[in-house]
Amino acid sequence: MHPVDRKPPLPQLLAGGLQHVAAMYAGVVAPPLIIGAAVGLSPGQLSLLISASLFTAGLATLLQTLGVWRFGARLPLVNGVTFATVAPVLAIVEQHGSGDALGVVYGATLVGGLLVVLAAPFFSRLTRFFPPLVTGTVITLIGVSLLPVAVGWIANQQPSANGTGLLLAGITLVAVLAFNRFLSGFWSRIALLLGLVVGTLVAWPLGEVDTSTLTESPAFGIATPFHFGTPHFEAAAIISMAIVMLVVMAESTADMLALGEIVERPTSERTLADGLRADGFATALATVFGGFACTAFAQNVGLVALTRMVSRYVVAASGAILVLLGMFPVTGGIVALVPQPVLGGAGLVLFGSVAVAGVRTLAKASFERPANITIAAAALGIGLIPIAAPEFYDHFPSALRTVLDSGISAGCITAVVLNLVFGDRVKRVREPELSREPA
Image (cartoon, rainbow, N blue to C red; front, side, top):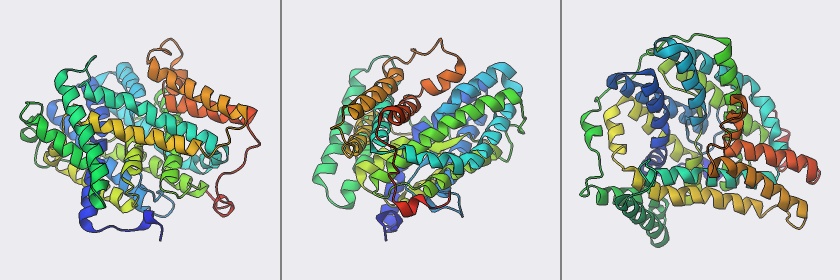
């Protein structure tokens, strides 16, 4: 049995699942916070919107890890709300006003999700264009593009970090490294969770832990179907969301290819198609409960690389925890106790692990050919533009910015095109028997 399919003991499942939730919690709640504020929801309604996003992220994660028929990659893949759809959603809100905007958003998201389900078997055939040169470049970009997120956490989303934030981030980083180095077995694999606990305990007497998340959160609450609006279908909103979903598919593809390399079970066309189908179905289902578009979370790919807990059942446990957090918001307040600088300290090593996995994959490519060096260099350079200069493409058309503002997407497209034009003859990097599996 492959390690991905092994079921660890219950304590390891719970600890590993909680560790994944801690790593991705901020990423799940940020989009509904931004969208809810733009729409003008009351605090109670905003709490329900966040709960809906957690609930649907848990359902999507369970579908990806456990699988139902041809839906689910059956890999340790965490799904959550993608940030890529925030910009088009805010544009829809600005155009339609706060009253009817969410109905239009859910209509466009529903159609976008169904389009992903239909396009999955065709999109999955693109794996032939992802040899180690391309996948290594893209995985490296995933890790590097996530590092600014960790830096933003350390600075508490301010322009510059203060001494307290740096102290907490430093203590957490050292704790994670020390636990990973000096502990063994299961304890070393939950080094990130232990580091977050240490950082939070240090932050508590310094007044950096906000306990209002516990007192203000309701004990139970879940949005009823179509609580925030019945889907309305408008052509312009659907087109913009469909374009964004192509970008989401590209990023999910990169994450699944990266995860396949990390867990040493290369992602076949069939696995990729099943994973994309799950993304699309979960996105469509999320609109019923008030959630938003779902996609793979790259930070959790880094957590798998760091901890080597590759069992998909560990991530399935995180999906179950997310469902509970969505149904009982007060439990989500416990996870939200972790201060952002503490998350940032852990994020540095977490996201750096993804970049290291990309470098390891790049080592499989032949750099004896000068063309391969220039292909990787150009793709990395273009992919790093929106990271180095976030406003670089501000004057470009919005359709182009959807792709270019994502360093992962821009770098991925660049690597694929340059490899087709200047690289060796394209060969499948998957095993022949896997490649022949119908998508």
